[in-house]
Image (cartoon, rainbow, N blue to C red; front, side, top):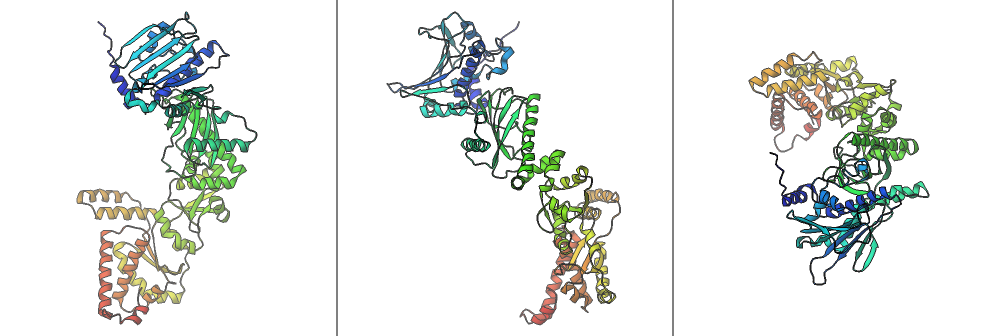
Amino acid sequence: MDHRFQINLRGVIDLLSHHLYSSPGVYVRELLQNATDAIRARQLLEPGHVGTVRVELIEKQDGGPPTLLFSDDGIGLTEEEIHRFLATIGESSKREALAERRNDFIGQFGIGLLSCFMVCDELLVVTRSVKGDGRTMEWRGRHDGTYSVRPSEHPLDRPGTQVFLVARQDSASFFTAERVSELALHYGGLLPFPILLTADGQTSRINSEGAPWRRKYESAGERRAALLAYGREVFGSDFLDCIPLKSPAGDVEGVAFVLPFSPHYNARQKHRVYLKNMLLSESAENLLPDWAFFVKCVVNANDLRPTASRESFYENETLAKARQALGQALRRYLTELAKDDPRALQRLISLHAMSVKALALDDDDFFRLVIGWLPFETSQGAMTLVDYRRANPTVRYVSTVDDFRQVVRVAAAQGLCVINAGYAYDSELIEKLPRVFPDAHVEPFSAAELPQTFDELTLDEREEVFPLIKVAELALQPFRCDVAVKKFRPKEVPTLYSVDAEGTFRRDVERARDESDDLYGSMMDSVLSGVRGSDRPLLTFNFLNPVVRKLAGVADRKLMKLSVEMLYVQALLLGHRPLSAMEMALLNQGLLGLIAGRLEGGGGSGGGEDSGRGGMH
């Protein structure tokens, strides 16, 4: 035989309060949603009906707990509907009777009323249906799962519903006039009909004119100022600009505010979203594309499906289309900004470069629009790509920050402008350039190309440095490094270590092999066997450097070799290249050798001042 599930209502209420809803204060939202749906249901039967929600705070004269009364002049419930919908978890008065118009309503899960049990132990619903026999019915529900239904002894003189809540002692803070007004405005501030609060004998309207993006303004400037003021009121922050948002999919409309600071590009902004003008969530994350982290939004959706907690939207095809449409609105804003106010676009790009780069990489049209305005670090200072291409027919770039640090000073001194594309998205953007603009020429650049731009030595100069070349070739033979002497700037740089990409990879694998055990080392040997041939690294001495010139004239070959080894290690370190075990040993031995030579030659008294000026620095 079949059996029915037994529902523990206290367990369900605990689930609601601790896991489904973010705060007990959402009971105000749920009551507003029920009232809103009742009014909309009546408007289907009576199109001219306006509707009003009344909230009254009743203080007990004897100091007992206060009572809150929520009233609406909506469609009301019949006795049969009370049994079906107020006493059955999972049902909704809109689910069947008005299924063909379900998108006109907010509540679709039949559990909203249970949220009231988070702040009270008993709930009284007094209702009179537009469709019924004119009787007023009472439903009294208790937190233990029992309920009763009977005709009311105090009939309502017109259709609608009243909900009475008596505050539980531990929830009295949610039943003050200030808190109720705050919650009602927070959740229902965009509702198109009045919410009236009565407390201490005074009645006032809580909500005002509805969504600010729907109002009429005399000028675009007045509209922008009003929306920015609204953004400041909602988020407590000043924004750079505001962007209208609209999507037919999901019937979404609202405004995006451009952040005045640059968040991390992986950060997901939390947006304030309304469902049919009722606040759904202040932390919705799935409404905009991932790249749109430079804005915070306030939007209202009429046709998106809420999750069970009604604090986010259900991920489906409609939401995906809405997300795409809102992304298009942000694209249009940036496109128009580039045409109408390029300087404003530059300021926005400099502040939100990561987001703009990600969008440009994803969208060819947007790439064409903004790529020229994107700033890049170069060996001749920061500049936009349009300025770079104006002075350089070929776009040269290095793909890592370490490579850029190695070449930046020397390349700048040679008049070469090289882009540092080692930051997020930069390499991909530059490599995309010729695919979008066929006339663009892009070349990766490495330190191995720099020696080709250096000046050659004269015959006399070659003879002068011949001993240095011989000693250096012999000293660096264990490191498979070639040697050259040329003239380059800046003259303060004594040497330049250069190697192509294949050589860099080989060097890294060899270093890993030397530092690993036999098993891992044999694996690295297998990797090395698959590396195609590459040019040997090159250490280029700068003939214009005073230290190099003096070194070339040193008669002591042992001192010359030691100095060459130190210059080799220095060049590696300046290029941010990790030292192998053998190179680390070379550094240690060299330092000890220089210290020993200095002690033997001049003692510790500093008497070698003249020799210090003429020696190595």
